Length: 274
Image (tube, rainbow, N blue to C red; front, side, top):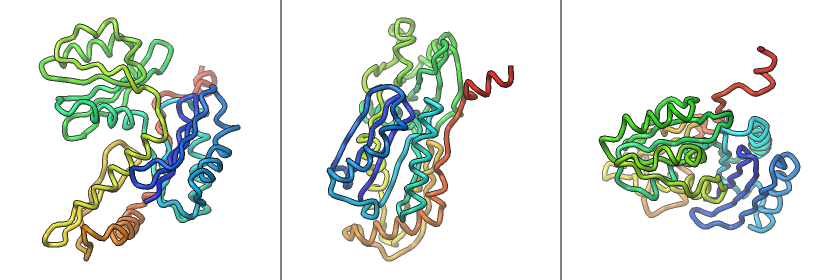
């Protein structure tokens, strides 16, 4: 299972290629607003390092926001171009989803995970995830609203993470039952590869005695749909499982989920409306 992951939604760019959980290539460009110039050459270089072609890849994952409007459009346009010319299966991962996954890897026991992403202008993009991986509707809030939200949810163990945490850290550091994770705020494509591999790897342990297979179908929203079908799939036959998963995911329009996650209108649209 070979995965290409790319991120251009966060004022920087990164590309990674993995085989299952093993990273074969990773390239990043930290200069701001260079995504349009660098992303395609970075993909080509990563393929060269991994000694692969586009047709060797099985999955493509790209961040879809919220973040830089221009960066989001660049990443999704490149991803769609690749998908149109290959047989690769594509999906998106939101910055909320990425931050939730990294937080859930660090803290196993929690009531809720609060993700706050820097939206600038004194605002934060916010989404909350519970133990069952159910997510709230993403929203745009100010710093005081974020602090109030955490203060009203302090009866149980909660986690707070994301690029917006540093904006409110001084106001939330003393909230009881709150674990603050200020690290790992930058999205990196190599972790996206590992996250996608994690979800697809669930297939390898999903067969039962009745051959009922529960397959994770990744969607453009943070949640995962689970499709249950019967088939002759052995948990020891990874190639058969991979082919089975590809066929099932195609039936669920996996490749049609390449859409942006916009929470606030672009600046140009705001100026036009005012």
